Image (cartoon, rainbow, N blue to C red):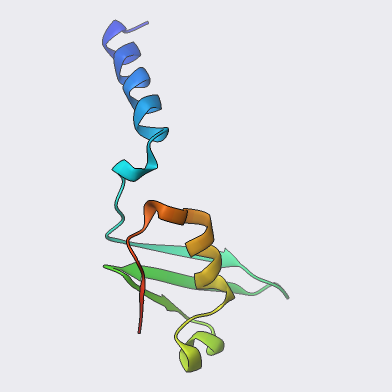
Length: 81
């Protein structure tokens, strides 16, 4: 085995065990919802967006809230649009 890689694997384990090291700036996710629906959720510098109609009227939805729960304290405080 590549001995340099062993050190990198160990370092990755340390990083992964400390989620406070991570800050998300932006990403997009597809979430499989009920009734065979697939929703596109984006996060961009604190602002969520979802393509579902509920988000369009309220600025939050079960899809964006699920992502917040999934990522927990890895995200800075979210701002809804």
